[in-house]
Length: 96
View 1: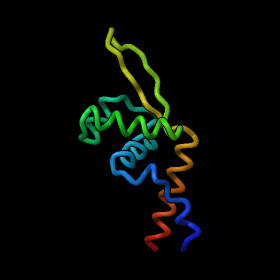
View 2: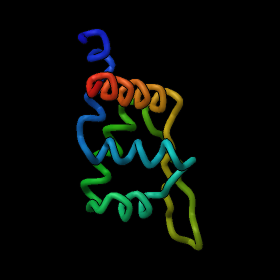
View 3: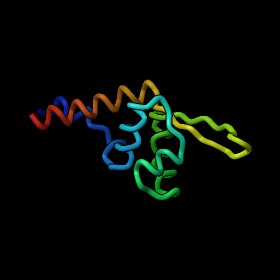
């Protein structure tokens, strides 16, 4: 049992970070507003969780302008996808 517990990642223990990664795994990229609406969180709450995932190098972002308005889009990194899949696999093993 202890073998797969090592694959549980503290970065995904929070439901918002889990939701961010879930959304970014099934979508190539999402912008800040899309994530905010999808998860039903405040700007500040979302920003702090995104920063945490960026710090772990699980997501990346790019900034651009849409009709003179700043737009930030987020995408999961290869490292983030791998860590997330390991985390989910560990949960699945735990439930068996």
